[in-house]
Amino acid sequence: MKIIDQTNDPGFATLHTLVAEFPKMASVAGEAELDISEFTKLADEDFAWPEQRMFPIHNREHTAISLAYSKLASYTPEYVADTLYKAASVYNISLEEVFSTDNTKEASLEEVYLLPEIQRFIYKEASDIPALDDALQRMRNQLTPGQQIQASSNLNKLAEYHSIPVSEQTMKQAGVTTTRLTSLVDWLEARGTAANKLGSSSAPYNALTTGITSTSGLSMTPSEQHKLASFIGELDQESGVDIFYGSLLPDPMQTVFNTNISVTKLAALDDVLTNDTLLQKLPLTFWTDALGSDILPDITSTDGKSVDLQALKTVLATLPADVKQTLKKQLVAYA
Image (cartoon, rainbow, N blue to C red; front, side, top):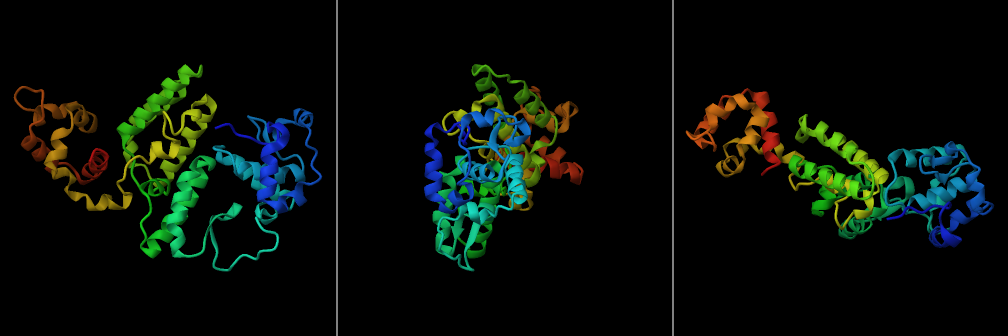
């Protein structure tokens, strides 16, 4: 999806829509000079997204307008939002001035926003949770990875409090699911292929894949998962493959949070090392990658080509506790 701001909005049609949605914004930005030639004279640092020369922040009026446009962006690096909020603070712009949808309505003390900084996705009572869950999924591509995480995390907390289930995708975006390494690598490789077809380089994706597979990628903390999703989003934006989101490629959050296995359930999976069905379906390469090639003679059948289940279980029982814990997390991703 093309990202639009005042530098590339033909006839400022999108801006008219934003003014209609946020009438207070017009009073803040009413004196702005909407001349495309003006933006070509600005330095890179006059934009919240300097690499793309988008979202001007060189004065109070354009900072307010840029904040409004940023709400519609399918993706921007997280620092862009940070820069916009800092600029708003410098110019003494309150977010309520920009994003209020009603000039006269006073907010209820019981109203909660899933994205409070921009007053978006309002929650008033438990019955709102299913509708908010649906709205988050429908509007996912309009949110940055950071906003997806924040909104989904807040909704998940409200849902848990009221014992109301939310969708699997919201749980993933909230960072309460694990990462399946094989799926993550597959989608990174697919991104590399797509990048090449667009005339971009696949090297950044190849480097990321190498880095992930050489470490304990499945033991990532939610914070590490979030950072990875944001980084993949930046690579996608730079290579142009973000145009394939929802058709040929999953977005960064779906790519990283790609299972329905809750991180909080890991501790309850003590039986994963004795799950015969799971152990039998894994190839020898899994065990050599996880435990080293020296393990082969101890776990293979007489032909050396397949796993001897009983021999494998005997070896697993003798592993140190820390090795078992790491192996358990890896096995969970294949469950």
